[in-house]
Length: 48
Image (cartoon, rainbow, N blue to C red; front, side, top):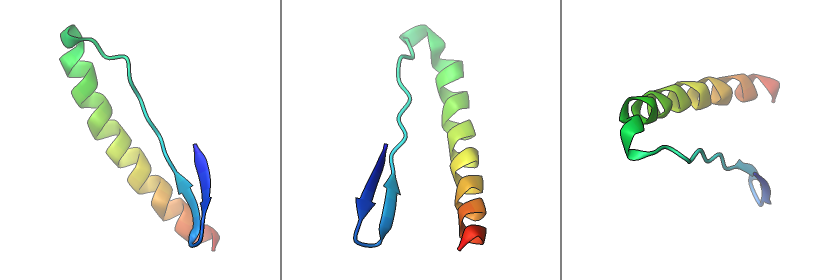
């Protein structure tokens, strides 16, 4: 979700639906999203 703020735009991303038996997939998603969002921040910084 994108929300306009006084400083720009806030991006909210949420992933859900992991069951208790999907612990490995859940932990993989945590690592994957951190890497993806870190890269996204670097890409967006180059746009300005």
